[in-house]
Amino acid sequence: MREVTATGQSIQAAVFSALAQLKANRDDVDIEIIDEGKKGFFGLFGARPSLVLVKMKHDPILETEQYLRNISEKMELDIHITHEVKDREVIYQLSGRDIALLIGKRGQTLNSLQYLSQLVYNRHTRRYCTVVLDAEHYRDRRKETLMQLAVKLAEKAVQTRKDIKLEPMPSNERKIIHTALMKNKEIKTSSAGLEPYRHLVISPVRK
Image 1 (spheres, rainbow, N blue to C red):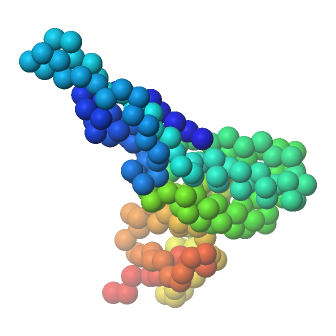
Image 2: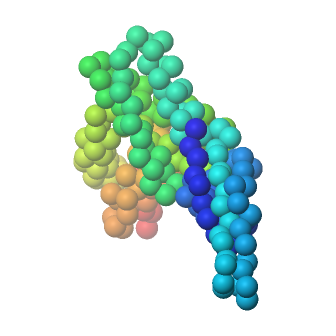
């Protein structure tokens, strides 16, 4: 369970500081007041800051990591898991001898697991975050493949004058293709369908 000890000129300021450090909402935490603080004479002499201990009720990062461990254990896989937080994105790095089984064909197993992990994470917090699962830097290799695919399919859409419908992809992969084709004035990209079956459509610009 993550926890933070924070100080402030008031209890409210100390709590606000702790929430910012934990990147959490008030409803996600338990608060223990260690020292109410003291304003001091004229607000200066003898002043003492407030001190609070703020603990996550249910740490979404650890809850999601435990979910991933449970899945790997049921599959009898020995998987090492680390995580990194970037603003409102949590990236889990998976590694292990049998990691290919968690990736699956064209990353389909990894994408499905990422979708389920997203649900687990956001079940334990009101502060929505995007969960990304990576397996021994598979996402970097996949990005290169998607960028090359985007160029080829855009050319096909222009030549055939027909819409090209891609297979379902997670939002981070759809974004890669959107970005790769952003400057191409001969086509436009759009998303269709509902998660986890939401997919990208590449359409020629009708003149």
